[in-house]
Image (cartoon, rainbow over all chains, first blue to last red; front, side):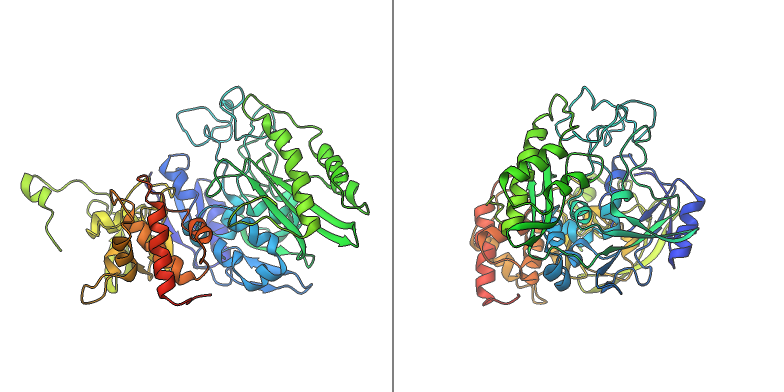
Length: 339
Length: 184
């Protein structure tokens, strides 16, 4: 780990000001990803700005419109086990419990989960080129070892995936990310928070320099009854998703009312396709309908040497997850048996 | 605290250390470690794991992968299990840390989880065991696990390369049963 200076920020304004003043500084909360990246010399911050003592950023509370606001410093465990999250947003709880381990979930923060970096092997290895780590050096994953990489929305510069499980639920739930910076506060719809790589894969999100994530707001619609998080991976526990699907449906009798679903493990951001959702609206819940929606999601998918299997896996996972959600039989994050 | 026999035997200089011993850039913090308040000066880049092992000679907590993947560095921080390798000590000023050395009673009696690990032969080489035990103590406290499936899932952060898993699950089941359904 490189040497750096340490600042314990007293309030959000100070943290944002100090982060804006030094592009080489990094904001730290749970640290479970940043400290790991520092040990690999992927991150070499000049300064760490510790935001864990900022007041008011840990609360989980109801919002004026009947939704739920989750403070950026609330730990993954605190969110997943919060009675209101378990009762009203079981999809969110399920995605969090599908990821990492109890030790990591106790330390990792909500804001940090959004801002964690890809687990691409090349990104993690400073001995290799990587456009995300060092812009302009190339992408050895293209034509290299790419089993865990993207099949949707990638570019010729980067085929990395976003590793979060929690963010897949936040995409399906249409959360809003509250941020604070020199220009004041703003809310970013979840679909616009993370970026596709394009020609600037070094930028994971649309946060501006110095902006701090302060909360994640969930809308009142919570898919409390019909939801699932289906996560497919090489090991049943403590492994990143090869393909995952978070799905929520409001059933109208045996027909689909409102439906939202998002995919993890397949793109540079949680992948949502509103056109595919629209195909399902008002239709009976059927495997044929789900397959048509899946076909639409994957229409532009591009496989590489080791990850082309993800396209068919994603197609089937979408059908299975929408079926689980419609039936109200969510995937268990304990025994992992697929119903 | 026992002397380090290796160091005494060679008579050479103490090994170079990261942290307070060599760094001018230290920050004063206070931690309560196994019930004992400590005033410490730490370099910002010193992990809690390195502080425990290299500065405080609390070597029960083990360094396995040093990347949060194996769980051998599991300790209780303010009562919650965490990976000590992914925590900077400077950020935890004011916290209470319990390591495997702090689990036994004041009279030296082993913690029931330690007794259960012995009874069930829940280890082979023993390197992962302090982390397994700290993690299992927290698992019981959390009150979320009963059935073997639940125990296995909630112990997924602790790897045992000797494969003592069946006996680890049995030891934890015994402690859960003896708690009479305490917890959730």
